[in-house]
Structure formats: C-alpha cells, structure tokens
Amino acid sequence: MRAWPVMPGLSFCKMITLIAIAGMLGAALRPAAAEDWPTRPITLVVSFAAGGSTDFVGRSIAQHLTEVLGQPVIVENRVGAGGVIASNHVAKAAPDGHTILISAIGPAVFRPIIDRLAGYDMDKDFVPVIMVGDSPNVLLANPKLGLNTVEDLLVYAKRKQNKLSIGHSGPGTMGHLCAMLFASEAYIDGSFIAYRGAAPMLTDLLGGQIDVGFPAYGPGSQAAKILAVTTAERVDFLPGVPTMKESGFDLAGSTWNAIYAPANVPREIVGKLNAAIDAYLRKPETQRQFRQAGLRALGGTPEQLRESMTQDHAKWSKIIVGLKLDADK
Image 1 (cartoon, rainbow, N blue to C red):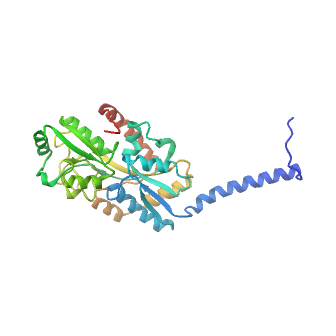
Image 2 (image 1 turned 90 degrees about the vertical axis):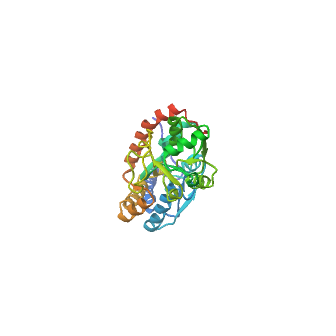
Image 3 (image 1 turned 45 degrees about the vertical axis):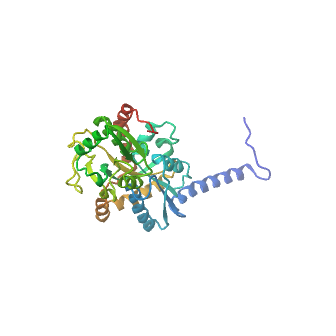
C-alpha cells in the first residue's frame, strides 16, 4: 500500500485537517470574489470608431453600468480590421469581469468564417452576456451627386462604366456583405473601401472620396442621402425610404450589437452584467433614446444571444462562401 507523505512536525491527522480547512477556504473565496465584483473600474472595449451605432450603444450602457455597479465603466475604442483587433484584445484579457467587449454581428459571426487566421474563436474565447440591439444597414450617397433612388444610382454607375467606390465599416461586417451582394446583383465593378467604422466612412462619403456606403444606420446617417434600407419592411423612423427589395434587390440584413466577456469569467459575474443591462434595455426611456438613434433595444439571456449567433452562422455562411468573400477585399 502507498504511504501518505507526512510533512515534518505534523501528524497525519493535523495534515488532513489543514488540507480540509484550505479546501473550505478556497471554496468560500471563489463565490466571494464574484459577489464583490466589481472591485475596480471596468473597461468596455468598443470594436469600432467613435460616432457609429456600436459606439453610441456602448457609451449609453457604460454610463448606466457606472451608476448601478458603483465603479466607473471606461469606454475604450480599439478599432481596426473590422472588429478583429478589439476581439483579440478582450479574448486575452483576465477573466475577472473587469474587461468586456461590445461587438457586432460582423466580428462575432462573419469574420471567423471569412478568415480562419482572425486569431480568436467566439465559442472558446468568449462567453456571451447579452444581445443589446440592432439597426438596419442603409445605402448612402453623397447628397451632392443628386441621387434620390437606387435606380438613379444605377444610371450614375453606367456613366462611370459600371464602376462604383463603395465604403463599409470594415472587412467581414454586415456593411461589407451588403456592399458585395449589391454589387454582385447590380453587375457593378465595385471598389470596396474598408473603414474603421461608420463615422470615418461618412466623412469620406460627404467629402466625395467615395460614391456610396453601406453602414449600419446611426445618428450621422441623415447627413447623407439615404437611398434604401436593408430590412424586409420599411422602418418607422425612415418612412419615406424604400427597402432594397422594393428597389429590385433581394438584400436584407441588419447589424446587431452584443456584449461578451472573456471565457471563464464566473457565471455569477455574467449574471450580474446581464441583469443590469437587460433592466436598462427594458426601460421605456432607453427604448425611446435608441429609436431616436435608429436602433431597436433587444436584451434577453446569454443563451438567447448564443442561439442568435448559431442561426446567423447557418444563414450567412453559405452566402459568404458564394461571394468568395476575402478579408482583404
């Protein structure tokens, strides 16, 4: 029979007692850490540039969490590569709930399909917290071009030998897919320009550096001419704007935003975050503010967010493969 090692100066019974006490202390400390959270400021990493819909939602939630959690929630925009830089940063963060991510359907679902070298795995590196909201993508044109409809845009493209420069919010975003689907269906030779978010894209659009853009609708979209929305039906805050389907294109999709934490964050912390954000999203005042910015507040459980990701992966993966979408395109 194998002998139990005994520490010098300790009887076997004393050693067993110390081991039992240490085990109980460890078990007691783990829940306490989650119950005490947060113990310092929280960093909310935003995947896209300031001024876009993801940034607007992130800052709104950060302000609310600061009020209800008793610790400052600092917004940090880590832009680039269509959300990949922010995703990789948070994936490597300590799983203590003090670094969280607000991302979108592009980096959460599309980009890992497009680019196997993205550097992160949404299933292994993250835990879903909550679906925040969604907004339609819109086809925008520079008002100075004098275009009022998608048909006007096609006429304009013909004058340019069917060539258009089309901006989007980064590789693998919903705007990127919309741009490529539109160009494919319209037989347009598109020059696709990737930006670090909707705001810098809009700046170039209004400055005439690009012809059109496909961002998620945000507060700045009204500065451009909105030709169409990418929803199945017209949206109530843009009643005079037709859908892409009404304009002759089978193109429908919206950009949702969601919050994630690094994998292995304690379940209690995820639950606290989910409850605080979900309560905020259900407030009539929050829903009114979101609608004014062209967003629909959603909310729900972490499991519902994961299910949405699974459904979108199944829906869009075939489209992405069919488009031969390239992260560098």
